[in-house]
Amino acid sequence: MRVGRYFHSVTLDAEKCKGCTNCIKHCPTEAIRVRDGKAVIKEERCVDCGECIRICPNHAKVAVTDELAELSRFRHTIALPAPALLGQFGPDTLPDQMLGALVGMGFDEAFEVALAAEAVTYAFRRIIESGEAPGPRISPACPAVLRLMQVRFPSLLDLLIPIEAPMEVAARMAKKQALARGSLNPEEVGAFFITPCPAKVTAVKQPVGTHASCVDRAISMAVAYGEIRKNLSTASPVPLRATGPGLGWGRAGGEAMALARGTVLSVDGIHSVIKVFEEVERGRLQEIDFIEAQACVGGCIGGPLVVQNPFVARVRLRNIAGQHWAKTSLFTPAELEAEFASGAWHMTRVVGPRPVMQLDDDVQRAIGKLKLAEEILDRLPGLDCGSCGAPSCRALAEDIAREDADETDCIFILRERVQVLAEGVVDLASKLPPAIRAEKKKDGEPA
Amino acid sequence: MTTEAEPLVLEFAVQGMDFTAAGEAASSIRKTCMKLGLPARDVRRVAIVAYEAELNVVIHAWKGTVRALVFGDRVELVVEDSGPGIPDIAQAMVEGFSTAPDHVREMGFGAGMGLINIQRHADDLVIESVVNVGTVLRATVRLGAG
Image (cartoon, rainbow over all chains, first blue to last red; front, side, top):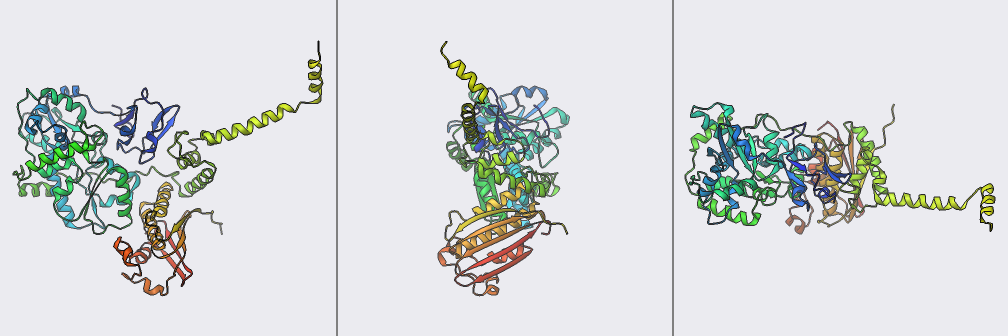
C-alpha cells in the first residue's frame, strides 16, 4: 500500500471509471473532479467516507484493504470483529458459531471490538459527566466524521471526546492480554480489524488521535463474510463475550443506548451530520450532552464494505444485542475505572484542524480569488450539470480562480465562443480583398 | 494612510416566516469564511451572528437582506429588514425578552436569546430601528479578536 502525505483507502479503479460525474456531486468535501475522462480525488480533501463508493454505478471507486495472506506475517494473529459483523448473518447462525468460523479463517484468537465498546462507553460517561465543555460532547468513534470535523468544522474539535474508538482500544486490550501470556514479542502479534468501511482502514494506516495505530491490518468485512460462511459448518464455536450495550454500537443509536443517560442526539448519514454540526456551531444545541454521529446511514451496518442490507442487519443486530443485554460484563466497574484513570484508552495526540478548503493561505489573496470566482460564476449557466468535471458551477468558478480550470471547460461557454468564432469565420469568408476577387472572377469564367 | 481593499460582498434575500429556508444565508456565509481560511473561532462567531440576525428577520420582519462584507481583518454583517421595527432596543437586548408569537416559540425559536448571542459574539453592534418601517443591524467580527 502506498502511504504518501495522505493515505486513503478510497481509491479509483481507472479501468472501470467512465468519467460519468455521478460521484462528484455526492462528495461532502467536493474532493472529486473528472479530468481526462477519469475521476481524480483531491487527496487533502478526502475524508474516506465512502459516499462515492456507494454512488458509483460502475464500481470504479474501491476501498483498498489488506489481503488475508498478511496473516502469515505474524506468529500470533488476533481477529478484531466490528460489532456490525454479527448483523450480517441470518437468525440460524449463532454468534458463537460465527466467531468460531472467523477464527477458523486462520486466526489464533478473536477479540470482539464490542468488548472495547463497553469500556469506551464507560469512558464517555465519565468525560460527559465531568461537564468541562462549552457544548455537547462529540463521539470520536466514526473516523470519517472525525476527518470531516478536521476539514469542515475545526471549531468543534474542542468538543470531541479524546478517547480512542473501540477498534483501537480493542487492539490495545487484546495485545496486552496476548503479551501477558509471556511467550510472544510485540512485533510477533498481529491485530486484524474486520472493517465495515474504508474510513477505518485509513484510521489504521494514518490515525489522527495517535501516532501509530495498535491495529496492524484491516480486512474487508465483505471478504471475511465469504470466508466465515465457508467455515460455519466445520468450525468449533467460540463463545461471544460482549454484552448487548457494546454489540449495539454496530448500528446508529447504539452509542446512545449504551450510555443510557443524559440527553443524546444520534445522527447518521454524512450530509445530516453536517447539518447537525452547523447547529452545534451556532450554539443552538445547549440541551444536548452528547452527539453520536456516524457518516453512514444506519451506522456501521450501513458501511460500504458490508454485505447485508443495513435495515435487515439492524434488526438482526438488535435481536442479538437484546439476547446478551443482561449478561455479566467481562469487566468489573473497578477495573474499568482503573483503566480509564490510567489513561489507557485516551488519544495520545490532539486532533487538529486540516485547513484544506481555503482558496489561498493569505486571507486578502483568498478574498481576491473569491471575488474573481463570483464574477466568473455570474457568467456560468448555473445548471450544475457537471460536464466540466466539477460538482457545481460555483466549484468550477473557484477552480478557475485557483487556476485549476479554464472557463472554456464549461460546455455552454465553449459553445458560445465557438458560435462567435464561427460567425466571424463566415463573415470573413465573404470579405475578400479586391485582387483575389479578380482572381476568383477569372476562375469563374467558362473555359 | 493606505486605502483599504474593496471587501468581498455576499448578499442574500430573506423572507419573513419562511422557516424552510431559514439559516441558508448564514450557512452560505459560513462556507465562504471557510474558503477564505479565516480562523476557526472567527468562522464560528460569524456563523452565530449571521444566523441569529437572519432568524430575527424570518421571525419578526416581513422581508429583508443579509449582507456580509469580508475585509482582510474583519467581517461586517449588515442585516436590513422592512418590518414592525423594535420600539425599545434596550429592552430587546435583555436576556429572555421576546416578542415572538407562540407558534414560533413552539418551533423552538424566539427564546429571547438572539440579540444577546449577537452581542456576545460580535466585537461591535449597532442597531437602528423605526417602528413599522424596519430595522438595520450592523455587527462586526474582527479576525483574531474573539
